[in-house]
Image 1 (cartoon, rainbow, N blue to C red):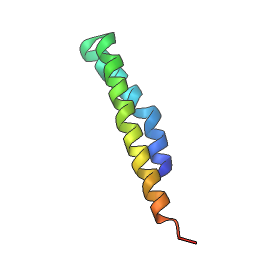
Image 2 (image 1 turned 60 degrees about the vertical axis):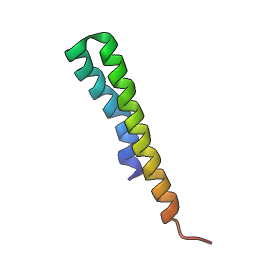
Image 3 (image 1 turned 120 degrees about the horizontal axis):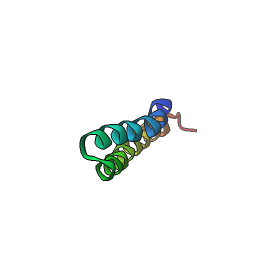
Image 4 (image 1 turned 30 degrees about the vertical axis):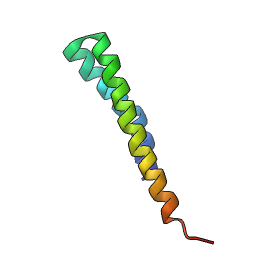
Length: 58
């Protein structure tokens, strides 16, 4: 789960940059890359929280 979240930190901003750059130019591409990074960071955070909660207590 954490691996998917960390992989998304690279994949989603690149996808956002390519699609935004194609549809609206460089400025839109940068904003969509930032949005993709924010979404990926949220997914990564949720997966880390789930992993910490799944850890057995001592």
